[in-house]
Length: 193
Length: 386
Image 1 (cartoon, rainbow over the protein chains, first blue to last red):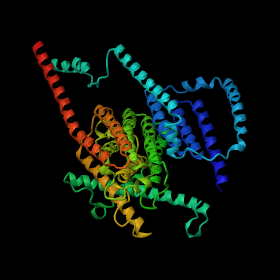
Image 2 (cartoon, one colour):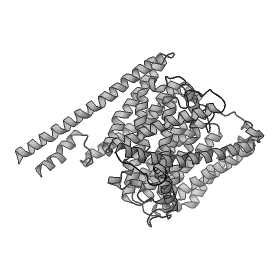
Image 3 (cartoon, rainbow over the protein chains, first blue to last red):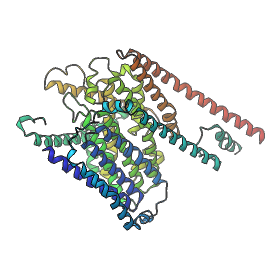
Image 4 (cartoon, each protein chain N blue to C red):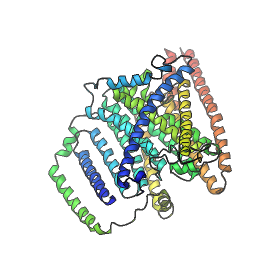
């Protein structure tokens, strides 16, 4: 029974992933794209569950759907929405896009079908303990490198934001935390009135 | 695959079990929401020296049923300029993760949808998915108040997820498992996790209040400043799904997590008494513990005023996150240093909790004093100049 259900689930998930991914590129509006991207990520998580890697699936949803898509939507809401302006940019290059997709897709398909008969590897990684111990023992160095990279990116983002703020010379009106702003404008202004 | 009861074919039983579970979960959410709304109104009324609903049915018990019927019978209305697809999708996007999180809640011994070995991670994941629906609701409403409500909600929920998950991780370190059933089974005695890691409970409680949009963290739906935020354009059963069902469902889920992680879940007297009475008594204990927390949530709502957005963010990023990180580091270190006993962890946690409870009012007072001095100096300066 399971041998029938699993290919069906795989087919549904694969169709949903490819369809939603195409929708991300072809959709007219950024919001639609963002939501479809979340849907793609959810289906990817479903694939991980099929592979027996529930932990990775949970992290996939936690990080990509719960955090990254929300942040993208957050950014989208602060930008003006011109209908179709975004979609047309991509939709003009259909032939070139199809050619590149075919060129990239062929080797992937060849490689995928080469693995057809060796699919009986027992699922690993569903349990948290082997995953955690392999991250902190066998792959400790790559893991640390990745964390340092993320830390550097975070520090860089903060530095960029701070520099911009100093250049324009004014912080937000609600910034009561930094001492110089609260000393300068609002308090004295109100007292003079 | 395990054979089903009553000689049912295992494959049919698997599908049947799924169906029964979903129907039970829906039943629980719908009735739980009705009960909790009634309870909330009655409890708040009692705290504010009012009577509360009393006209419909005995003690007003049928009031929420009448309200629900009214909501269902309402016209399916949508304002003209809203974004149709997203507007309709948003309530479902908010409701589904909440419904799915009921799968791993351990209601009683052998009364659990699925004992996932990553149960707690699954719950955290679903908790983070609800934000998406709220942001979409705010955006699709095409209304400035709704948009601000949705954005506030995204900022608040993403921020408070961090201390919430860090507190959960501390509890996981102590119990040694992510499975909700195993976490419950590690706390059979009277000394449950609340005596070992009280600070993690305090920080999780605060984060849970924020994640369920309850007062004092209900800024996304603030009635007085945002005319109910992302809910402004919603009416009828869409409003009912988003506000009543989802909010009270989420409250039930986080209270269930608190009852399981810190208060031993279904553990109580008489859970070994028999194959039928044991699970039922366990269910009773779990329900009592969960509802005790829900009552505390209502108590908080009747007591505290709403925070301002900058206070909310400051408290999360400058107080809660450093504190939970420190707690996590201390707990992990002590657990490795003393693998056989939990007493050092408990002592450190109680000390940190004391420091938190004493330190916050002191810090707050110092900050207020500084602001007042600055104001006074500025006024003096202005008077001298003018």
